[in-house]
Each structure stands twice: as structure tokens, then as C-alpha cells.
Image (cartoon, rainbow over all chains, first blue to last red; front, side):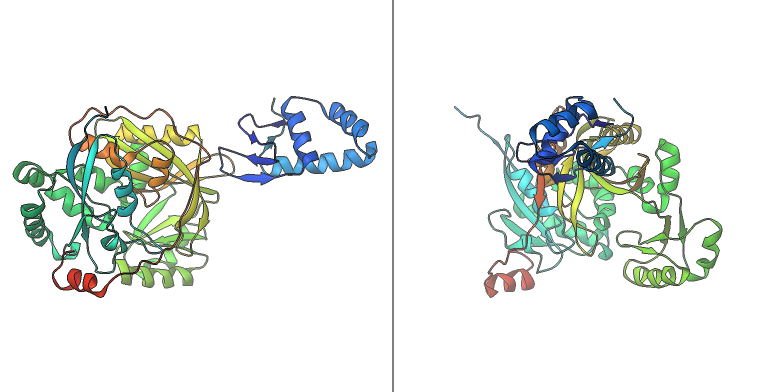
Length: 83
Length: 351
């Protein structure tokens, strides 16, 4: 899973897909995760970063993370199986 | 010191700006922003309530012209009169229904009256017609949904042999409705044919996202400019009330291929469906700029200005890029107009 290369992110959490014209808003933690995915970080690296820095545990994070990733794929912000 | 602009008089049609707006006003806005020409605009209207007639900051003078159904002779007579007063350099027609007359008269305008008209050739105009789009797609290697012309509701029951429902019922110039049953198809056939005549075009419905391109061809195969847009707010007539410029290499390739293959001359709009599998189907080619052409100007490609310069014989270099993520948002604006102005355009045919 990889964030599409041309996706534009702003610091306010505004996500813009220039190939479809779609735009979305995400909260600060969503933005942080998208940024890490864009940098090519693995799910384990992202999990470690979030669990170390926020009040959550690994199993809660994993559930929410995979839900979030599924949403990103559905919205075509991310592509499965592409690097 | 700034370069002195050349003066030019341009006559423009399509001054209506209702819920299905004409391209005249946005074309004029583009012309007014020309860096090379100081433009005097002559509006050509069909009805007294076309808003552009009363936009005096955009249109210098307006003349009524006869409806296309009146024939070419009456159009020519009227334009000869207007030309005798205004000394027109260029006419930019903006309606599908009037284009045939302007294409037919283009040679006369140029050689006898000295007026330029930068429009598609008659062959280009005819072969991209909705009724001929299937053949057009095959000839130019572009995917087009299967379509068929019909002339009577008696042909509708047989459609099930070649089509699956839903299908699209289209008028020859305007209007399209999606029919889910033969009964709905018959209903739309009657409604649309009553307004736009026959034939009616039946087109296979393709699921996907509609995207549009406004472009300009130089008549020699070069794409001078092309901007892609996705509608983000659509009226109940299916018209864009807001849209955003997008970046799509496949769309640009399809556009340049089509313009190169046809040697398209003039402005055009491509209506395309992009499926979830990333296949692109051409739904329609409109042989003039769309009403949203000012988005192209806002994105850095002034297509109306480039068309004007091409028409005047200038060497126009193709645009290489445009801003992605620029939006247009239409709005309704109430002008207050004195009855004397309405009286003038209604009785004298000019304002």
C-alpha cells in the first residue's frame, strides 16, 4: 500500500487528488499517518511512532490504522500493492 | 514602456447566461484579457433577455440576429448590415445549432467581407456529430460507447438486442436522459424529439466519472491548449455550476490524439467518462468552447485569446502547462436594467 505520488497534502489536513479533483479533510493524527505512509514508513514503524507518542495501545492502533488505510484505498488516495 | 495593443472588433454569440449558459460571456472575458489586442466586442443575440446584452462593461454594442432556422441568407443579410456599421474583424460563434451556417458562410465572410471565422471544417463538424460518433471513434481509434440513431418509438423494443439497460437517450443538439426501461426510453424520445427534432441517438450507458476537456486546435494537427476539468457541482440539467481543473495524462493524450488525427480547427469540448478500470470513453465532442472556458483562462491558458490570434493569422505557440486545482464557482447576479434598454433591443434590434 502506498500513497499516490501526486497527492497534495497541506498542513491543515487538506488532501487533494489532482488526477480526480477530489479533496478530503483529515484530523492531525490522520495527516501524520498519511505523511509517514508517503515517506514510505512501514505499518510497524508507524505503529511504534503512534504508540510511543499518543495515549493508545497496539491493538487499538492496529484496528484504527487498518480501517483508515482501507478508507484511503477506497478514496483512491492510496493504492494497494504499489510502491 | 508597455507595448501598444492592436485594436480589433470581435462579434460574439452565446450571450445567454441562464442555468444552461452559453459560452459567449466567458469567451468575451478571455478576449478582454488579451495582452496583444484591445478588443471591441459586438454581441450577437437571438433573444432580448440574454443577459450579455446588458453587460456594458463586457459588450460594447449588441445586435439581434435571426435564428438559425431562418436560413443562411437572412443571417448573411443581417451580418452585412452590422458589418457596414461596425467593421467586424472576427466572428466567434458559440452555439452548436448556429455553427453550420457560420461554417458554410466562412469563406464568404473571409473573401468578400474580410471577416475571419475560426471554426471547424464542414467535414470535422459533421463527422463528430452525435449521430456519427460511433464511426468517428472507429476512424480515429478512440473508445466511444456503442450508439445508434432511431427515428421512431417503434424501434425502442428492438434496442434490447444491442443494448443493455440503462441506456442514454440523446437529442441531436442538446439534452440527454438516462432510461432504465423501454417505457422511460419512449417517454424521453417523445420529450427530446419534440424539442430538438429527429433523429434521437441511443447510447450505451457507461458507469464512471465524467471529466471534460476544453481545447483549441490550430487546424494543422497541433493542440494549442487543453485544460481538463471535473464537475464538482451539477445542476438538474447536468450543467457544471462548479468545477476543478485536474491533471490527467491519459485525457491529454486522448485530446492531442483526436486533434492531431482530425486536424481540428477551432475551440472544442470533449465530454469523457473515465471508468473505475481507468478506461476512457468519449461521449461527445462539442465543436466550440464550453461555458466553463474561463476556467482555462484562470489556469493560465487563455483559449479565446489564442483563437483570436490564430484567426488573425498569427503564429501561436502551444501552451505547455496549466494550474491544477483551480476551481470555478458560478453564481447568479441580478442586474437592474432600465426598460428603455429592453425597449431598444426589442424594437430596434440593437443596443
